Length: 450
Ligand code: SAH
Image (cartoon, helix red, strand yellow):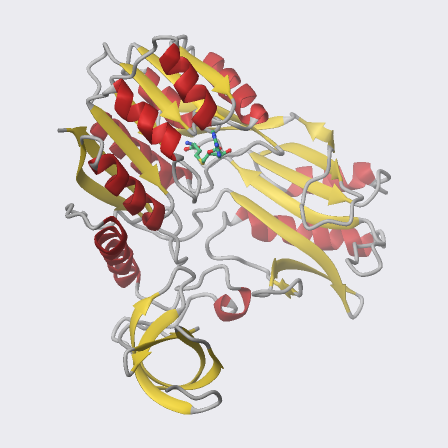
């Protein structure tokens, strides 16, 4: 039996969902934050439960061959990039292995999993940054929350964000100091500036800066806009969002445009999208294109098909499909996202896509009852996967192919197994690295009617 507060020497064998190392002591699972597969480490047990233990990494006795120095000096503190200290190729390999093993273990099915499609340059890929703003010893600090807390780690430059953020952070600090602007304190609930959020169009170079304030009055507004305009190339929009609630949710209800447009634009492949302060947009547009192209390849459309895009968000996949299909039906629960989907369809002159707001488990059966049948179905559910009602209805429609885009291999595995009992066979799975240096895995699966 494992004891608490005792030292053990172990080899790290695997990586968990949050990037933590996993090892075994006499067959007993132990999670070790900071451990990488292949490391031999000395750990001290801090928590011992019935089925697992948690250990603190005390010393690396022999480092894994894949261990490197993370390019970011605060990677360890920030927790955004959990596996930045792992060689990128090894990151891709481990993501593939995670998908393979999860499908075997949970789905109990055999399906080929391809090598993870990664980025040539896995840095500066994010198009949206959210910086909490604070004050430390009279100095404004901006950056990211420390792992598991609301302590702000002051960050001049984040390696996975668009480089424009460095300038935005510098300018916002300058504004705060020059005009003695107060910053929000979570404890006292006083102070003005809460967060600064930036959005960047990678293809267009357009930049939006959003200042989230606790209250309406933003002093020296003109000066702030001028400061940003003079120094940020591509600045298209400066927006204030008011949030005076005691909440961890970043955005409040009201948004005011201080300068320029309400939206910026960006492209994914040939499609153009309008992005507002609060609208959802994929954060890694370059890899999104890779993912969607794979989904489109799997959909194998000839132009005569009726296609469903279930969990369609702002309709990005739907519009990709619409160019190659006869008709696309998009289904999504968030009303604002469907509004965006319709706007984006118009923006791209797409007239064969129709969008429905509501829960997929209600809407999809309704469409089926109306006699609408899909030849090809694409699903891109949230982490919890698809509801059985959705999968049942899809199976009843008897589409030739189902393309399953997944952000969680565990629910993908479960749903693949469920579909295999309904006459559908998983043909292949392609992992795509949407979030380099994080433990996150995204994949797309091709499923065919037997
Ligand atoms: N396909 C989109 C977004 C997928 S994310 C894209 O590529 O951009 C998953 C989406 O499912 C989210 O937009 C979420 O709002 C939506 N969603 C969650 N539960 C849902 C449900 N029960 N019915 C329909 N949509 C749902």
